[in-house]
Length: 200
Image (cartoon, rainbow, N blue to C red; front, side):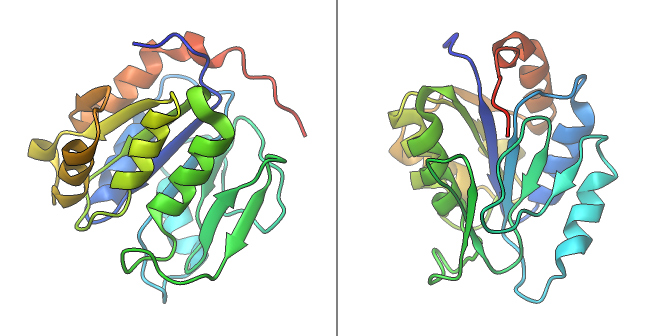
């Protein structure tokens, strides 16, 4: 495993992933001093606050659905809003986009993962979870190609394995884990996040 400092965690998922994200967040034994960026496929009719509230029950870490131009802060979870693509720019700010759907999805996992890979490079940890289409496969490949650390949920553990199996089909992945093992992995690598010092 790489000993590069981790400056951002990005998590993507679709069908069945809300339960897994809650399990990951509730399993953390510390509050990471870095941003955690989450993009989950959502119905365009979803209210923003509903999913955020569901996830917030699982963690004391504040969960924010960012606005366009919002500066990224450590110790915060950012959830991609309904019906908008979420992008990280080179000023470590968020951009929201209404550009066309990717793999029938907006927000798209690939869109966020590609921007995180470009900005954080070897200091990104990408995590891809259960889902019913290929969105996220190319994104996590790009995280890997840029030197970042990668995890996919084991297809045997997925509610629907299309997403994670698609990632495994196109790229080497550092760790293939069951859902309950992901938070353990993060906890064991807390030391890699302690160097995070970005401020607003």
